[in-house]
Image (cartoon, rainbow, N blue to C red):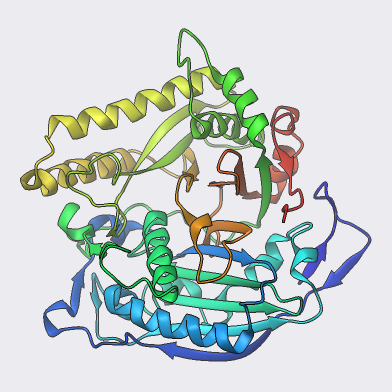
Amino acid sequence: MRLRFSRTGEKSMETMTMKVETISKEIIKPSSPTPNNLQTLQLSIYDHILPPVYTVAFLFYTKNDLISQEHTSHKLKTSLSETLTKFYPLAGRITGVTVDCTDEGAIFVDARVNNCPLTEFLKCPDFDALQQLLPLDVVDNPYVAAATWPLLLVKATYFGCGGMAIGICITHKIADAASISTFIRSWAATARGENDAAAMESPVFAGANFYPPANEAFKLPADEQAGKRSSITKRFVFEASKVEDLRTKAASEETVDQPTRVESVTALIWKCFVASSKTTTCDHKVLVQLANLRSKIPSLLQESSIGNLMFSSVVLSIGRGGEVKIEEAVRDLRKKKEELGTVILDEGGSSDSSSMIGSKLANLMLTNYSRLSYETHEPYTVSSRCKLPLYEASFGWDSPVWVVGNVSPVLGNLAMLIDSKDGQGIEAFVTLPEENMSSFEQNPELLAFATMNPSVLV
């Protein structure tokens, strides 16, 4: 694993190898057995069509006298075991279109890094190095594992300087980004000793209660080139002041006079996606965006609902040779958001209408996707984890100095957005084919607002 200490993101002549050494691997089971009546969880149609990858979060903590390897490891494992009693499907195994919640357990890995201080790593985080802080090296094939077992893996890596990193993987088959955030908040509260009901609302595994249940016979068209392309992931940081400048640029009295942070950054990234892929043979490039439904239907979906409770849709499209205008992209993003709100409003918001809304949204998604072909459409995705309270994840010591969110194994043509620590800036982790990335990362309009892989300020 190579660490390249170059503020611009270019390869540096000075390199060093960071060695991550595994100390131990353990299976953690729920502290109390799962009752017989809860031992089968039905997957939803949305769960079923998602690729077999893990939803991932990294939490970094600098030196703290409360962090000692032996004490911290015991605390994390004990509190994880208690937390799994509430999040019992994460200790289960996927069989077909159900989860067998029979307490098979989650994997917990302890590791250490002695030859590289955390502060040095954070000067210019290398994405390949980041992957070594995940526990997926303990499974033979992560694609198979994400679709079977283990459904949850954790890796606590201790740096010689006293800092640490916690890498968390939950299969995307039962958890979206909001779900992993809820899990982390609950686990952290348990580690702090806040076990009362008021400290953390109990999770509700509601995926198949909202969307129709999964059917093994149903299949969406597959991208036969997935996993065969050579892609690269890079980090771009939009500082708070630059985000405000971008919002001003994206605003228009004729379209949207006050675009959000995410709308503005999404529009710019979409423009740069299109500009970086001039050689494609596809007739259309399309942008897929994911919307968290919990905040849109609070009467039906609690914030603590666990599952893939998202709406995925094509929000932007452009023909071959077309050029994106940021103001128009923001307008179209806002229009799609309002159309989704109208669909939800038309079905009402009573508890009786939960499955009706879910069925209607599922049909809408599946109908739209069935019209796409990988031969004629080149899909890109922007997914936002902004506003998720991951920087509040304190396990009894300080809050994290840096949080990273993505999926693993990484998916191509993807931009993952997450708040900077100040809550105002945005970090974008962009994955593209290498030939497209070389154009994307040099786009002058992108670089007017974003810095490539700056130091993490600690």
